[in-house]
Image 1 (cartoon, rainbow, N blue to C red):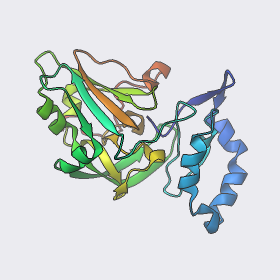
Image 2 (cartoon, rainbow, N blue to C red):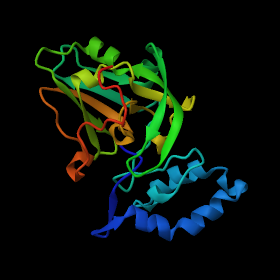
Image 3 (cartoon, helix red, strand yellow):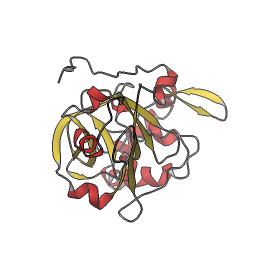
Length: 238
């Protein structure tokens, strides 16, 4: 799921995030100026999101420059004991991975930019995890497989990539971000990271990868986002 959104529906009415950001600007500035309040801010966001059906926690910055956002009011927490990633669809060897099993696979580290369509960005962010291409090779994609559909354990979010995009070396099932385990607020314990695309393509709280015969547009594409969310200047042929 993305860390940003064009609007949030609260009590049935669309709310422009930039308008609400202006409303909260003074309070946010005060928080940024108080280092002792900044400590633990990310933990607060993760806890607040569990009880915030309005999604207004998505307007609050965390110390790393990211913003928390969810398309549902509450997202369950997963860890080593209950996290699973299912790979199925047009594959010869469907499989469900646990978190320890994903950690045991060969890991790759990518340093890229996290760029939001809403205007914020965090440059030079390291992600580490399993190359999506390796998981696809292990599953054995069938000849008719042409795309991937990603689903998430929030129960609502989805995304897509073509098979060619998914096999790029800069696309990961990421387990760490900024050299630390990915927190719940940032989509952990495992999320997608698609380095050459806008951050909404890097689905948070990843739970399913299904190989399909065509691209199935994801959640934000239903709101007018591009199916191929390339960053400006991205090498689309890599």
